[in-house]
Amino acid sequence: MDQQAYGREVLRLFSWNVNGLRAILKKGFADFVAKERPDILCLQEVRATAEQVRLDMPQYHQFWNPAQRKGYSGTMVLSRIPPMTVTKGIGIDRHDTEGRVLTLEFAEYYLVTVYTPNSQRGLERLAYRTGEWDRAFLDYLCVLDKRKPVVTCGDFNAAHQEIDLARPKQNSNNAGFTIQERQGIDRLIAAGFLDTFRQFNSQGGNYTWWAYFARSRERNIGWRIDYFFISNRLRPKLRSAWIAAGVMGSDHCPVAIELARS
Image (tube, rainbow, N blue to C red; front, side, top):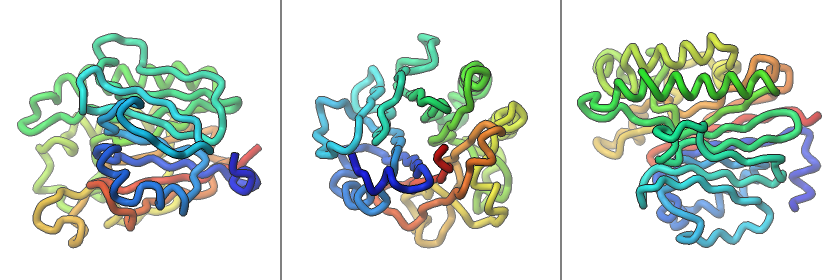
């Protein structure tokens, strides 16, 4: 274990949609981990299994939840701290075939990483995403929250407010910024979960995903669709939250928080 990391007064938690773990391993992933030294690193859109990837990171426990379909979706957590329990999915078969949720239980909180289904071009999957998935996932979080506080992070595939994307008017009826998807985040917040980044930053221009075309990232024409939410009662422990927009390698960048250790 990294004793220097454990000596910090805060826990550093990162979340990153890597858009393919095997690809990002060739784009500085190990350097990113060595520099930031996260205590816990949650990954989405891993698109691989443990058998397909060799990670030489003995300081981390590795937990995987791949999709049944090869090369698709999937989540993963790297943790310096051994969890008490690990749960794949939310316990509903029709939602759990794509490896989208991974839960680690620690002594004082649950950590839930999620790769939310995209509503897709033409909103082909909007009804499933907002009518079924969002509600089932929130129900799952609320059950956990009755037991102990929750930290949930990942790619939520929705910009919450106009400030969270560069071109809200042009995208008002597009996947990721429909009224239904935005209401899903409204319900999450109403249920008692805080958008950690907005506890420290109320400015626009802060994005976590950029399209690959038209120099979108260079021009900062992006969306904030990756989040850390925490149970309200964890707010006194929240020390910072930020977007690591300078980290390259994926069409998303990492997001992070620091929580005070007990």
